Amino acid sequence: ANGAEPPGGLKQEAALDQLNSRISYVQLALELAANIFTDEGAEDAELADDASNSNSNDDDDDEDMAGDDGEDAGSDIEDVTRHFDEDGNDDADEDDDDVGVDFDINDMEDILADESTIANEADDVVQQSILGVFIGAIVPSLQRLAKPTKMSTLATAISECAQSTPNSAAIKVIVSVVESFAALHERALSCFNNVLLVIEESLKVWFRKHGDCVDQWWRLLIDIAQLLFGTAGSPAELADTDQRLRFAVLEPTISCMWTLARSAQGAVPATREQVEGLIHVCEQAPNSDLRVKAIGVLGSIACRKPGHVDENQRIGTYLLDNIVCTPLLATGAPSNSNNVEPIIEALDLIYDIYGDQAYDYDEPVFVRGGFLAKLRTCYLPMRKLVKTVDRRVKRELRDRGDLVVQNMRGFIDYKDSERRTA
Image 1 (tube, one colour):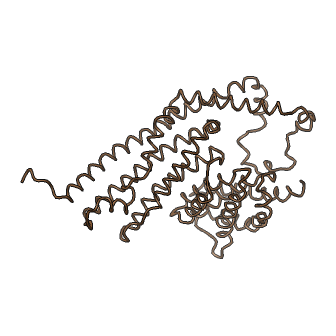
Image 2 (cartoon, rainbow, N blue to C red; image 1 turned 60 degrees about the vertical axis):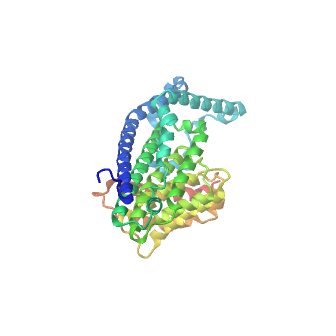
C-alpha cells in the first residue's frame, strides 16, 4: 500500500502544488530585481545622461546658467497661456534678425550629427552599466515570463488539466495556479516597466538609436494583450474570477505600452486594429487607473506625424467625444471623483496633440471636426466637476484638475486666435 501510485487526480494536484511553489520563488526574484533596478539603474541612467550631454554643454555653460535664471524648461505645463501665447516668442528673435539668414543645410547636418553623437555616447554608457545588463540579458527573460501560457487563464488551464469534469477540489487548485501565473506575469511586466521608466527619465535619446527594440517590445505587449483576451471564457461560475485575473495582467501590460509609447514619442508600430483594441480596453476597463493608462497610450499614438491623419482622427474624436464631452454634458454629470482622472488625462493629451496648427492633422481633424466649439461647451461643466473633488482627501487630483481647467481656458483662447493670426 505504501508503494502504490496515488490516484491520477491527486497526483495532478500534487504536481500543480509543486508548480505553485516554484512560481512563488520566481515572483520573489522578480520583486528583488525590480527593486535593485529601480535603485541602481536610476543612478546609472543619470550617469549615462550626464556623459551623453557633457560634450555639448562644456562650451555653453555660461549661456545655460544665464538662461536658467530666467526660465525653467520643465515649467511649460504650469502656464499654458504663456506656453501658447502667440506673442511669446523669444525676445532675442527681435534683437537679432540675422539668425534665420545664417541657417542653411549645413547647419541642419551639424545638428543631426550632434544628435547622433549624443545617442551613440548614451548607448556606449548604457552598454557598460546595469542598464545594459538588464536590456541585453534580463529583459528577454522578463518577456518570456510575461507571456501568458496555457495555465494563465482559467478556461485553458481547466482544459489542459482536467481529464474529465473536474471536481471542486481540483478547480480550487487550478484557480490557485492561475492566480500564481497572473502574479508572475504581473511582476515580470512591472519589472520591465521599471526598465522603461528609467530609460524614459534620463535617456530618451536611446530609443532613437534602437527603434528595432521599440518595435519588438511593442509587438510583444500587443501579443500578451491578445493572448489574454483572444481565448475562450471560463465556466459561468468562474467568470468573475477569470475576468479579474485577466485584467490583473492586462493593466501592467498597458502600463508598459504607455511608457514605451511616451518614451519613443509615439513612434510605435500601432495599427488601426490595435487602436480599436485600446479603445475597447477604455470602454471595458473595470477601474479608472486602467482607463487612464489606455487613454495615455492612445494619446501617444495620436501624436505621430506626419502621415497618420486617419488614426489621429479616430483617437482625437474618441477622446473628446467619449471621454470628455459625453460624461460632462450628460444629464447626470459624473460626481464621483474616480471619474475625473480619465477626463483630466484626455484633456491634457488634447492640448499636446493639437498644440500647433502646423501639424498635418490639425486642419482636417481639430478644425473640421469642430473640436474648439466642443471644448468651449465643456469648459464650465469641467470647472464644476473639478470643484467636486475634495482637496483634503485627494489633493493631488484636485490640483491636477484645477490646472487642467486653467489650461483649458488658455488652450481655447490660443486655438481661437491661432488661425485668425496665421
